[in-house]
Length: 130
Image 1 (tube, rainbow, N blue to C red):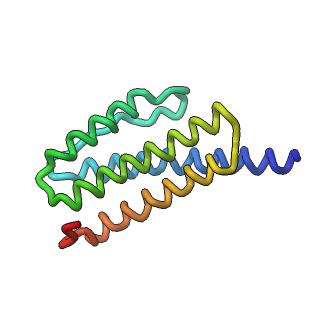
Image 2: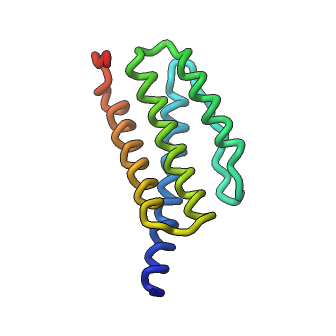
Image 3: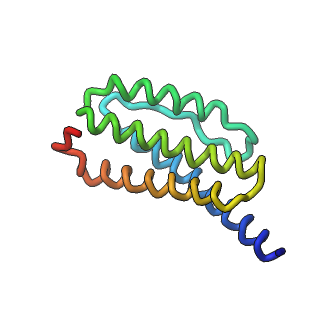
């Protein structure tokens, strides 16, 4: 049983690092928009990230006004929502315990985040009017 707990702790720490890296990447992507969107820094030492959460929520509103095609606006919005999903699952894991589905959900949200971020970086959204 100790091995299972050690594995859960290791996975939680790994996902936590990925969340922080994804936030940094999101900051870069949003900062490159025609009207740059600035996010609050992720404070690794803070127990609560309310400033980060509020700035991301505000970013969702600002993205709507960007002079970019609708598919791009939707992609940036999905990035923010997937980041929120992953982060919230890790917060819940920290509070309620490392149930496998919580960490699987966080990991799945991070995979979605990476897929959309790559599509943005590669310019694969051009011409997509869905």
